[in-house]
Length: 51
Image (cartoon, rainbow, N blue to C red; front, side):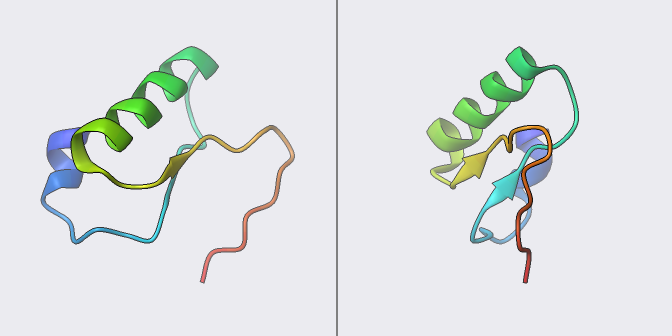
């Protein structure tokens, strides 16, 4: 996933909305660490405005 994201221009944020909580948290941390992008795992039911 991170290798695939590397090919894209940096977004303002990445929201991880699928997967198990622990796996999503690990991927969020890896995106932050390796790509220096803002990544977030929204809580269940949380709404995020995407523009």
